[in-house]
Image (cartoon, rainbow, N blue to C red; front, side):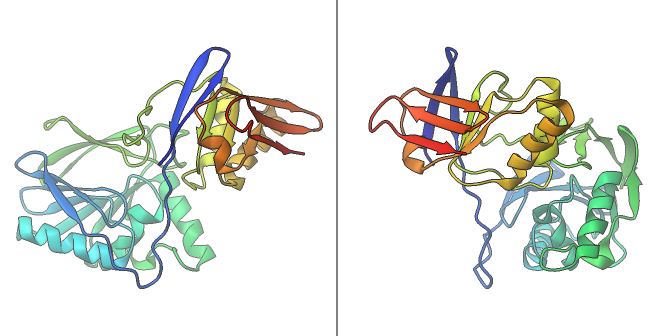
Length: 296
């Protein structure tokens, strides 16, 4: 990971890019790690998105099911070490495969709870088929349609919050009020040193995007609302982000430049400027080597 600093109108923007590479077929599965939060609540990392495990009176509630049948099976094995109680419910925070596709290894008849947008996105992925499609026999059995629903599962109280637009069209934030624990899915990425920072009026620099299919709509809405950065600089092309800028231009008459440049331009700590006009977009560094990139 490279630390990158760009200055724009006196504001310093620091981005710490993280590269996410899917595991090759047949690659060894990432080992799971279990952390106890309270006497009956755990978080399991590795093997895809983080998973929550909540042990109730008669069964276990799982929050997100990992990325593959293999990692889903490994998650169930870790749960079996914690309790002999069966998994009865799964709450999905959103439709990304690294949170959903491990359901293929879960027992038949398990209740799957998801927000309406998540259910629709899973259906679309299933209809499209191909690698990464969700398991057809573990689609959501309970759909959350509103912004807040309170449910009690195995004697444990849950609050399921939906705020949009977010990471996808169907995100749920899962809150346990008695334990004061929240599972946010991918809405919050606490690994980034600037998570929660205001990027309005700044140049946002990333080595690569996360690759979420919702990125274009989130960027377009941010441009409309005036909360988007003034420019985005990438080390690798991200057509989904570029689409968001194009949609904002067509719908709202405003956009921001999205430029891809060589990694040498991203690795400098020297000030840089981004200029855009009808002929193209230019990134110019004023420090070591004067890195410059232009896209017409």
